[in-house]
Amino acid sequence: MRNWVLILLVFTLSSCEKDEAIDTKTDPATLAHYLSEYHADKTSNKVWLHAGNHPSFERETDERPIHIRLFAPERATEFTCFLNDSIQFRDSLRLYRKISAEFQMEREGLFGLFAIKESRSELNRYARVSYVLGDSLYLSEPILIRAKAISTDTKNTADLRIEVTSGGRAFMNWTASDVAQANNLVMITDRTGLVFCAAQTKNDEFLFYNLRNVNRNFTPDLFDPRLVHGETYGLRIYSTDNSGWMRNFRSVVFRADSLNIQSFD
Image (cartoon, rainbow, N blue to C red; front, side):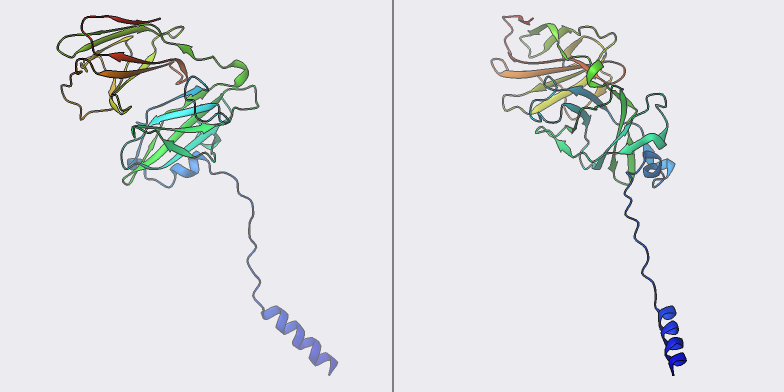
């Protein structure tokens, strides 16, 4: 009898299905793995972005001093940020790992940002950002995220002059301090704070409204606009170096007045 009980016990245990082991490791996805989910014909590297440090870049997220800011097309989704701690391998997709950072749209609805913590490391890092639009993945080129110990403080855009014509045009020129061949993002807002003109130029000047020397136009629906005499407008200028780090910034309010040249030191 004892032998029959033993045989029955062994049979019962061997016939039971074992639960599948659960892997609790949650290594962050690499950029190489993320890209493998999309066909090569459905990827693009036309994401525009730059990075900067608080407080000159943006003043609302004190606990997150570095801001990665990008142009966010309408209907784009799945904004994702990847960081690479090895500056020796700028283009190695396996070394970029997804970080848990929330993407926030700015009030104007053109640009948005990732606010991230400063690295404890003394090393610079590279960042890349992606989003999905339709059935395609858009990925940025790498930009440099400077370590706190060697980051360059953001300086004021200097010698800013604004001259408005009687016909509603406006000529603006400025000096991008310590930035050779700066990429300048020019944004003009109306009295409600809404951005209605945004363009990138490599020149230290901008004629509103002339796209001849513009490298990228972020408000393509704007056609032959004119400033209204007597109205007040806001002007923001972001100057970044070739690595994508913002070095100069200026935000001023000016009046559409053809009788006075307005200067901001």
